[in-house]
Amino acid sequence: MRRIAFAFILLFLSCGVGIVAQNEAQLSQYWAFPGYINPAAVAAADKLSVAALNRMQWTGIPNAPKTFLITAETPFRFLKQNHAVGLLVVSDKAGLFSTNTFALQYAFQKRLGSGRLSLGLRLGAIDQVFDGTKVDIPATPDHAPSDEAIPRTSVSAMAMDAAFGAYYHHKSFYAGISATHLTSPELELDEKSYAHIETVYYLTAGGNIELSNPLYELQPSVLFKSDLRAYQADFTLRMVYNKMFWGGVSYRWGDAVVILAGAEFKGVRVGYSYDISTSAIAAASNGSHEVFASYNIKLNIGPKTKNKHKSIRIL
View (tube, rainbow, N blue to C red):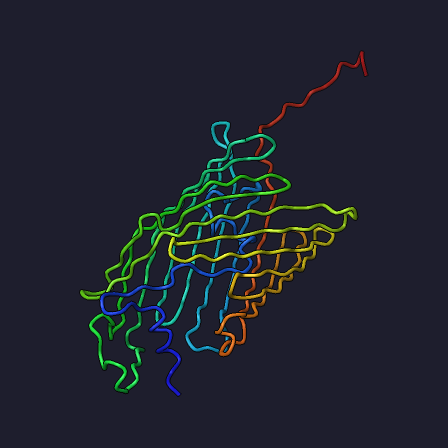
């Protein structure tokens, strides 16, 4: 049996002229990390938050994608306006590629109607490594023994990266649009190999539906993303009990059914998801696992109100 690692090389390499890699991490619990998708969503709920996520995609397949994500964000008030800042760190490995992202995020928030509109910007650096020492080309007449476009050493490159988004947050729903990798950076790994990172566009929305029994809430959400060549759509429905426990299901169009579960207690939030592949890759994969944990503190950053006292004469 040929090493499956070579199949991943074919998946992530272009033919003859360069290298194209998977640059966007796949998250099944995307609703828990809105700032990863859209910088305008940073601290949109006025919460100081620190969170971490670990994803193991397509377990059972060597060199399958693995993602580790850390976010930190906080709201603040300056010059009588609401703002938010955040930190994003992502380590994503897929095949022989390792992609690391380090970025700062900022959002300007403005009250609009009964909700809040935010505009956000992300600036940072993206570093990509291709480990050519692990390239394994089968020795058959159907495979060329070498290719100048495939490095045989470990090569890397770094470039500036940026994202922009708009996000509307209401107590009953949210919606946002964003674009990542706005500069479409091209990373020169060596003299004959490069990595080109396409701009990716996101559309996300969700809601909070209160049921007749106040202990239960339905939280539907949707995520759509595209690089204008291909697209992916996720549809999720979660049931929340007593604002503490949740369970649900998600469907990723043409790819997977996802089972979700989690809990929140005194600001500590944990969640788990399991992807059941519905595509052809299910024949080789045992599914995907994803777990996250976060700590959140609600901050009151609104305008300070002066204490008002009635006259004792009219008490």
